[in-house]
Length: 81
Image 1 (cartoon, one colour):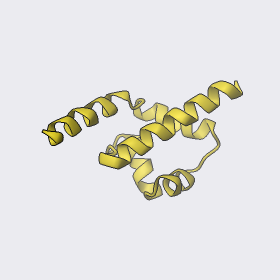
Image 2 (tube, rainbow, N blue to C red):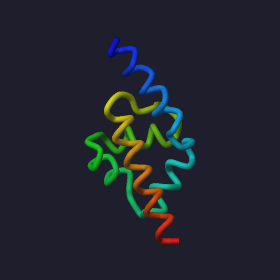
Image 3 (cartoon, rainbow, N blue to C red):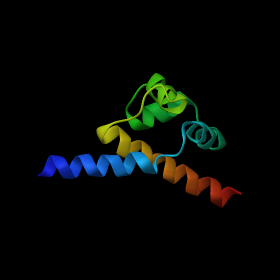
Image 4 (cartoon, one colour):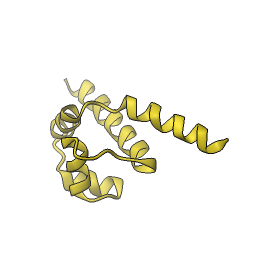
């Protein structure tokens, strides 16, 4: 039963991710490089670049960490404006 819940939770999280081009805009607005984001999330800069280009999508824990990271950056950019 837990795996069904986990699968539904991941589908929901995936729907909450910004569009690919928006992910890059959010990162760039915060003045962060792919390397900095990757280091923060514990993944390669290449993985983050793939997520931003739509070549692949984060999964599992990476999905949740990336979603939270983007939300935090988005909140930061709203305060700065």
